[in-house]
Length: 278
Image (cartoon, rainbow, N blue to C red):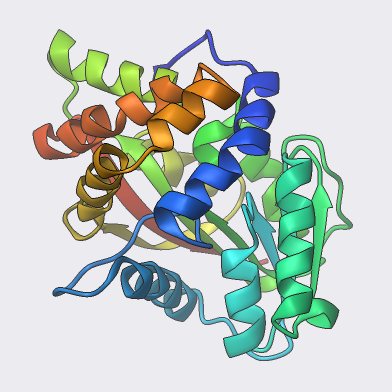
């Protein structure tokens, strides 16, 4: 695991309060990678990633789903509409909570969704409350990842599933250059640490879950950062970021770093499905 001790939780909250507009302008309502198999549009690729993960998680009508790091509510709203589940979204950002609730109401799923502004590392839920715990590109922001998985496993009903997509440290960080790439991504994207695929499996197993599927999606999602980089270069987003919050430009500048880390193997993008067999 690569750690970046300079990251602070207050910085993560500020980032998402301010950067939600940038995400919406650059990428749309979903704050996550796209999954490409051909020449799909970015919008279609983002929905493809959501649908692929939902299928692997076997989400069914009427189930209770907890979306950790719900962003602007993209996954929660889509799954409530298409899988007819009830989704509870958690975000550290007050701006994103308001945005999510408004979007859900506008799309007719206000009754099947709820959103809370809270810290995923301290929020409390009753044991065995959820059929599915869903988190796409949020666990990177957690400071104590093993403790989160221990707590989250208790929220799952017997037979419940955990579905995670995450940025990962590569398996072979055998050079200083590769380790620096991962560190620079952590610094620019406010990740206190990045675990490897083996770390995630270990955390889930120690939480009492059975890991039933691990997939490497790196080659399918890397195009995300080519498109984002090109959109930044062609737009005035950098100027807007500098005006609103100077530190946001570091986030934009690290798009190339993340893409390069995927290419060198310093980073991967993984999907994990685990089940509570209790």
